[in-house]
Length: 493
Image 1 (cartoon, rainbow, N blue to C red):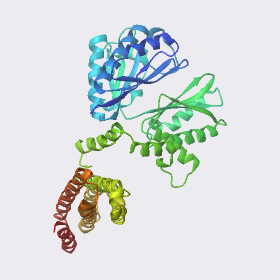
Image 2: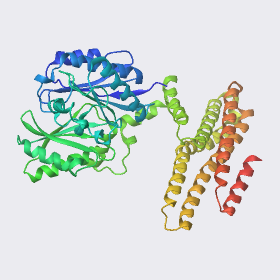
Image 3: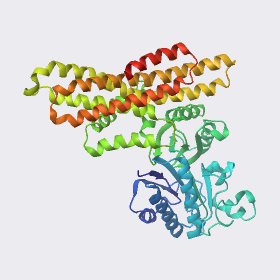
């Protein structure tokens, strides 16, 4: 499976378009795609957003750093945004088929190559940090290029993670790291008083007592005071909450936000969450959005490529080194597919002249198979969630008031984790019986489809019952266990 990694290098050039063009050109290569480029003359900084295969994007980032070192001289650079390198910061973000730990490995490789090829020292930050204090970019960049240049050789705390303790004479030093998706979000105020922006930034950022996943500073940009922020975990500290806090703090100084901007890209979910909050929509979920619903519906009706994408995603989740989804979810999926195939066989036989005498039986089969298919689709996630609930119960039991209440929590979770695969097995058994009833009344040209449906139903039963038994082995309530075994014996007979 191809891996997708995002890289968002920030370069200390936001005024000379030809230089930015040259840097972007240097990063072009097969397997890497340019998603966005932002230039800001006041900050004198550009932000490039790339996505690509893990191997290709590493080389693209390295080449971009090298080209920036050729073109940018920090000795004559000035701008509102703090900087310490021509290529100032190069973060890697996991998107698909890759973890943060994988991005840490990428960051280390890229850092070593930057020093080896260009003699630019490298600091590692966020998840790639080797020193706890360097998780925060602001700690590494303190004093900017000039401060680091003065201290790198004499202050052990400023020694780079990769390379010798000396800055590149014009390109400075580069920070490379791995992190979750970050939203660069700026709010403009209706005042040129930058001190107000700085006070608001101090109130909102985590390092001075503000919101947990917010970093912030105040700048003067285009004649307006700007609260410039990085949101490092938008799911835990959503963008709408940040805006409201900035608005509230601004009111204390008699000013207000007049606009805001997003630098680079933003996940769709962040905007969906903001829309839900500001509009106060009852019972909102993302499926209410037209484009999301269309994507979901069309995804089920597309040609082979679209179908493969959905199946491939689930298969790769099964292959991942995590406990869920596991055999229970796979069993539910097999049962749902069995129901789907049996429904197709019934639907393509019903209405044909040769099978009019079986019209009522085929209709009855479709009516029975449809809810079974939908319930088994739900069980795919439900099985994984029940396993997670068992793990949470074991953890919670350790801090329970007494041993008995802890055991009760575990027992309840285990019973739920047993009930779901038992239900899957029973539904798959019904599908198996329906498939057998279709054999003499269906179009014989579809025999292979019905055979596949029967085999999938059998696999679902076998897998689900195995999950039932493994849970029963840990359940102490023998009356419950006996009831479950009575139901499983009917399936096996």
